[in-house]
Length: 197
Image (cartoon, rainbow, N blue to C red; front, side):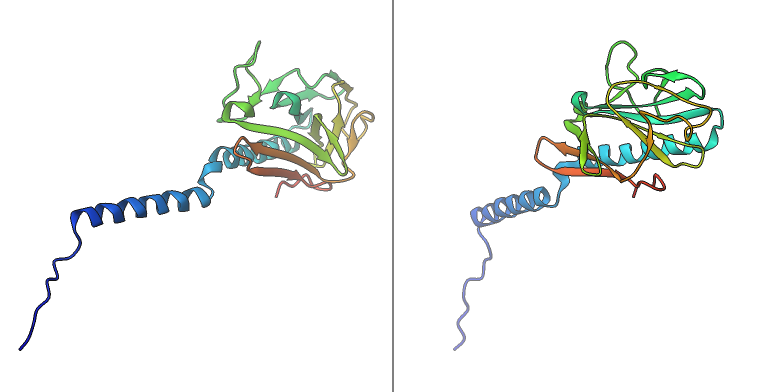
């Protein structure tokens, strides 16, 4: 004689409990996959693109110096250009790269504020030294030069002939980035070529 058992499947309560457990597991997996650092990743990519943009503009323009200024204390950076044979405080002729949106900084709104997306800029490291303010400029061949501090520079007839406080990079630059969730990232500029990996 053959006996049949009752194979009615899951009850409604068992099905709901299973869906709740799967939902919690999916939420945990997505969080661990790193989607919580989207702002950090986007600032990192934008900063790398802006450094490349400044280098590209410097290589295209024989009559001007192009650079990028980092102010880690204010979580800001901006691009600028200056004429050769001219005094520059790194704040004149600020330029937003294409597609960039400036932070609401008075008076001109021409700086990029990483704090608006909860990302902290800095410290900026040049070799073993750190700086809260650093200016990075490129010569006509794209070779990087840097000056730390809040001063100004009198550009010569070329970047190579400018002299102090500007000097050719002797080691790589690393710009540290972090978000409020504790995620960390960085953008590097190589000393010889100005390449941003």
